[in-house]
Image (cartoon, rainbow, N blue to C red; front, side, top):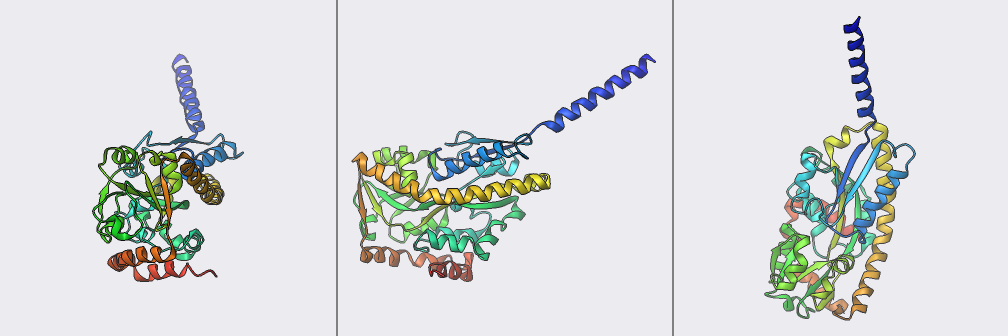
Length: 332
């Protein structure tokens, strides 16, 4: 009788432990490398807030946000996702070339005239197909988030392509971006985002490319006296998750999370342009830097100088995909 009682108590204890374990929330670690007051930073916090408030998810899913490379730097975050140390990231689109060459399309210089063209392409069939193009590598794309169009910064005034010759520009780890600067006879230097300020301050690099919101949030204007308003390229992010983790979620949880991501995407993309406008004005108000807009003629010189990069990567990316992206510049 005593043995039976002990057995029943043990069984009850195991059962209770199972219930406690089953009640533990699903943890989603969302890591990124930028500040909270950037489009990506705001999007991550908005996703965390909406999941925490959702009546069907608030007790089942917990989102933890780690900004400013607090968990992993941009050189390690993809590896962390693939091994399951984080569950969500929003890397720059420039980070995916080792997983699919097609996503390099977003790095081509002067491909998109404006963000409206980017939207038309990303929301079209070719853009949507790119989100699932890395599933076989363990990466599932959930959405595109805008940061904005890129501008140049340097320690000297750079108005025409010839002005950039010999300068060392920081680039992300992207073959396209390296070739972009080689096309104007500048010297690209790969460098993580967290190291850019110090690299500019010490002269390891002479300039960089980024959006106004990233320049402002990282206080790059303190160490760069000149900005050239080129709008020459795109910095967007793909919100991604570990494919095995995502597919292993209960179907109702996965569906609700995707719905929230879609809602956040709309807000992030609406706010990105406003954040960049505000950041640009903050840089002007700081009076530490000069911003030089380009005339249409000057911009055309840059476009002509960098256009050969399209041809160089046409086979890798796909000529049809480049054509579809280029045609998105025509408003429907």
